[in-house]
Image (cartoon, rainbow, N blue to C red; front, side, top):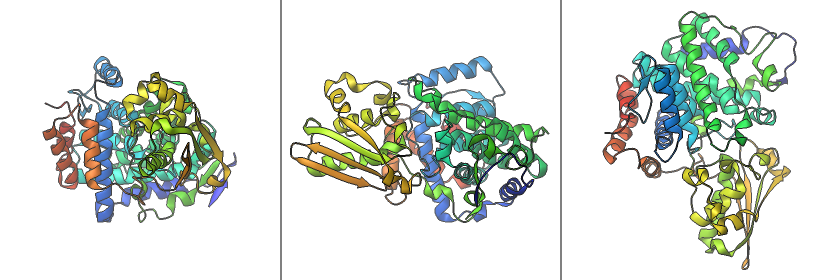
Length: 463
């Protein structure tokens, strides 16, 4: 049931209690084999995206390393891609930020949620502190992804966007909390208080669109991971919090969107796993642009269209979401820039997002001939689908592709070999071939790992 939320008090403890009880009762044995396999693929892919961000080509690693060195802390969790260790809360912040930096990890389109960039670092940091088994960590990640996606959907992620909030940060905080709380062994009132603390910490604005450094955007994921772990740790220490954050006089939904759907949280909970709905990304840019990229590159390949032949590119995207990619000053979210770049290079690498390739007159010229149109007809399936229609106008005629399911979606999946190739491509500058193989093997057998620290050590600076 979906409803508008007013200031009137609602019954205490219903949604909070039901969700907390589910987290307490859920066990590894309830994870179907297909869900376990997909979760490990998502973890592996997410680690590739995270480690790519530690390349010396990018400045963010040095900035975050300086933060860790200057603040100092109990060395209980690994800062990935470095030889540093810090407390689990700071590790979650740093690794979560790195996890979304290159914008090439998986996402959930309907929830507009980059869950693994948040939940993975939170679970690994908390798990390393607790010396948790791989079995416990993978269970926590399945739970965390589910909670993050379901809370986002319950708040209406399109409404969050409309009000300037980043759904991944707001709702992802609860996913990180669910994973960390599970690994900290929280139960009873402590778990309910932890949910309340996560709610008071939930944040994340879309104002990062004006930050050309591309630091503020991934910082939102780091905040979500950090806040989830800190809420769990505070509650484990006996710190109190609102015991029913989704209800009462000041419920979560009232603060963010005024909308709330308990059905989005509980329908299929424990039976339909959100990790199975995640999309793998092939391009280092906003997921909204991916269907259009698929269509453009398909036209070029099938019709033999060279970049210099293109007179105009028109991209139709759902009217409710097109503004985020229409001439956005942030290149990663600018369809004009990304489509022109891809037309010339056949790919979208994050280095080309950070370093403006419009210094090439051909790319600059084509970017000025890309039009993005908000199409109300495409709103019918948004945000569950980012259906896009791309039209390429050439002297030889017009070519159109209507892309409903981009490559990497459950309906058009990437093969395991393609995921391995992506991981290798992303990490070629920071990992040896041997270390890449060791990480792949560790993740493949994650449920058999006795202490998650074994995997975390492989994610330290490569020898």
